[in-house]
Image (cartoon, rainbow over all chains, first blue to last red):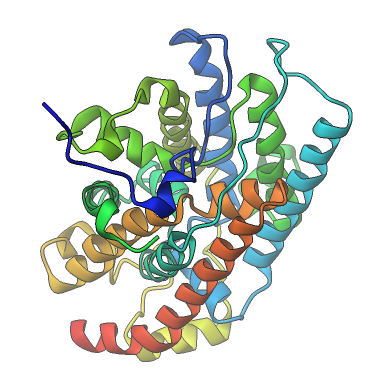
Length: 167
Length: 191
């Protein structure tokens, strides 16, 4: 059956299909070796909750300029991430499996503005980006399962409408 | 003060921020993974309800690490809340409390306002706006933007990607506009 779908022109050039969290490892990984990402996730989730980044109130303080906390968290995270990436590139540090570290470039399309604005609205309403949604559920806020399911539905709807949206 | 007691206190930004930043090189060196979380939502769609939509026709198993990662975040949330919980109440700035009280949020005891995010609100207009609509915008918006706070604001900026700066600025504008312009309307609706 011939597919009638065609990528919008502005998307065709993005190549990477707008993934984040790209896996560039060539060597295949089995389920067991994926456990290490679970462990990093656990530590990450603990930081999220202990620094109260998952708190709806902290996000409100940020958008009301009433506290430096979230700006400090994001700013220092970017600072450490930036230094690390530059060091990895400069000294050509390779991965545990001896592969060259590769980070796909982001290509600009207008989705980053339209989608960014829509996500920003959702961020203020829910007090959460996708990561904190998972941590909130783990923290026992079971109602947030509804928010997460709705976020999955939102992602699905984007996939459905993608070719008709401006990019 | 012993160490566990110190861990139980809320962590300051200068501890949490650098730890989050370190996730970037840790994931790169563990297995050439770019930090990013919103893709997990896309992988779930691709694995469970692809429905012949081209956007979900790809090898989602290549991204399975991301599902382990968010599974870990959920577990981490559990560990921090039930074993390392803060004995004191959360401290929220007075001016934010005042502004929120005017909107009708009065419960400042937990990480989340139970006025809005409780199980008994799921089937009410509050639940429809703050959980269903809010969640939908998070999922739709992050995928439309090609990433979220982790993929764009932290990973993208760390790698000096200007499209990620555009995305990050858009996130912030959306959040400011929602808080200052949309909130008065939304809270009026659910009053």
